[in-house]
Amino acid sequence: MLRFRRMLSLQKFAAVHGLVHNHFNQDCILYSRLDFKLNRAAALASAQSNGLRCWRTKSGSHSFDGTA
Image (cartoon, rainbow, N blue to C red; front, side):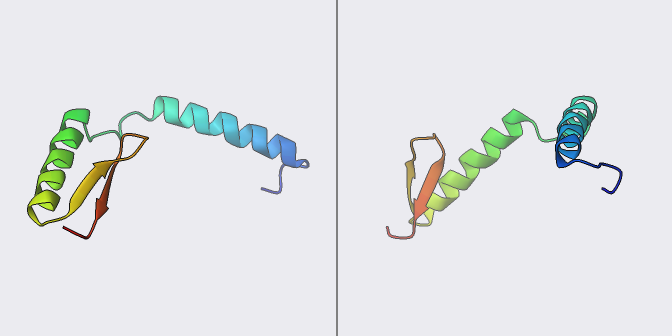
C-alpha cells in the first residue's frame, strides 16, 4: 500500500473498507443457523457413539477427550 504516507491512514482505510465490504456482501452467508445446529448435533452424537467424552467449556463450545 504505497499510496498511504502514514500507517494510521492505512489502518483507518482498512477498518472502514472492511466494514463497508462486510455490510454489503451478505450473499456469501449460505450456511443457516438451523443447518449449523443440525450438523453440530450429528457430530456430537457421532463422537459420543465412538466413545469420545464431550463436555461444555465456559464459552459454551464443546471439547472432546479421546478417553472413554
